Image (cartoon, rainbow, N blue to C red; front, side, top):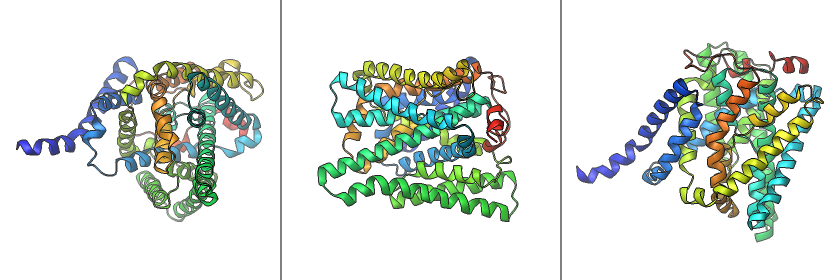
Length: 419
């Protein structure tokens, strides 16, 4: 029996960690109104300190599960994007692009004060553009938030993620070109991945709505169809070495434009989506190396202040021009604080593609990521509450919730104006 103990420890480590995360998240949310995702991250950080990833090296498929979980969130985020809004209010699109560029420039400038290599600085600046779809969507769903600030945050989050992905892939392509001189390999690691991932998502976005229109389905069936499609999309992206995150985002955007309403589908993809969400936050937090956290904590504080300043400043500057008050503008900027799961998985995918600076960048950003993982969801929660767009009190929710696509843009004032 003694010889079986290591195997037993490997077998129960992850289920035990997920159970503890769920219990802690539910308890802290009920007693002190702490966002559940913050509790999941806290458990993941402790698990990383106890070397949970090391205990489960023999367990295959954990990175795939994490990408699948985030792909579900990316699809849900994409389904809440209203492209016609960008045409009717181009200031929102301009804000997303302009704020991304400013964040990139400021972070690149500030990291130069710490004597980092230029390639590492470029990687950090690129991923600092993004916001966390998982953190923002989960908190918004938890609060049943809908309105001008909520919709603006979701749309800007999607723009930020797309800009970060594009910037990082262009750097990967340039790095391969400068180190190997192989133009084909450089193109495969940048333009090919970007364009083909979007194209695959568009194909699924056209085909699945056609399937749903051809056959009426109950609410659970709609949820299952979209979940299975995201699973298929993630698997295909793994086989083709594409980005399942970008493909899932494109899938959601196109499916929304095809006018298939998900009012009967469960938000967060029901219990299965909730379980995958818990795993996602625990898993990505457990990947953070504590020695790197302690070494880079001061840099993390500086980057947190710089990134928050950029987002708040840009949203304040164009608040009136884009149709909201200054108060809602700075609340929107603050709500974009989370940045964790998307960045960690993006850097991991980039590392597997052979981009060496991604490894050093991840270690350098450890303190920054920990701060944003723990504090980001709390800031988003309080910002949405301050905007008075939440439709529940901060108590445990019972029963299923209506679909992600039914929330937001069409019913909010800003969404109505776009339509």
